[in-house]
Image 1 (tube, helix red, strand yellow):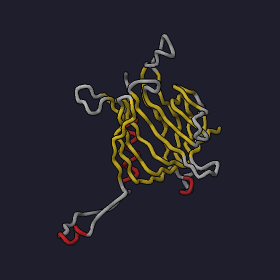
Image 2 (cartoon, rainbow, N blue to C red):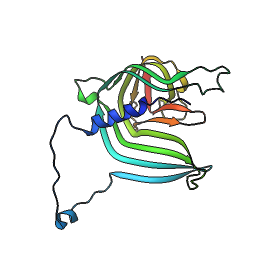
Image 3 (cartoon, helix red, strand yellow):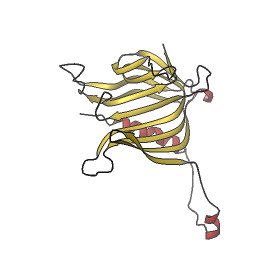
Image 4 (tube, rainbow, N blue to C red):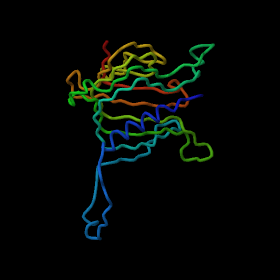
Length: 222
């Protein structure tokens, strides 16, 4: 499968934008033993290996990081391949995600309308994780436990899952969906206290093979 590397570039750019200041100056300073003994931290990260059953395990890294952004991207494309043989006897190459005129956030002049995420995490699923000779990577996911705000684009191709109430009855679920010019609004739109979970997954096999975007508790409007 030929998978595009734009996702990793996109993710790197987002993280660099979040982490690095526009300008600044810093220097290292040596601390004595007394100073070091007064420094401690807790609650920033959480690492775990979870048994998902069926020989599949998940390595999970959670970071207590909150982000706020207004970002414009002219074109975002992920996953160029022809792996959907079960859907088409004569498949052709196409993009999993093909988004044009992408905007994260509602208004660049109004910070309250930034696209916000809370609880960034990375996860990887493995088969036979304890057996190096047969260990296989199944998928990699980057996401956020809670997401709020608007994602607007011309979704020429959207591969993923969007559920407006997180009731396991998705309004959108499939590969290469042409949603057109739409706005996905994530967050507590129905005032029930639940935010949207947002993730981008690269799956190496199965129904979701390729890049797959997930939104729970999110609406889609023209």
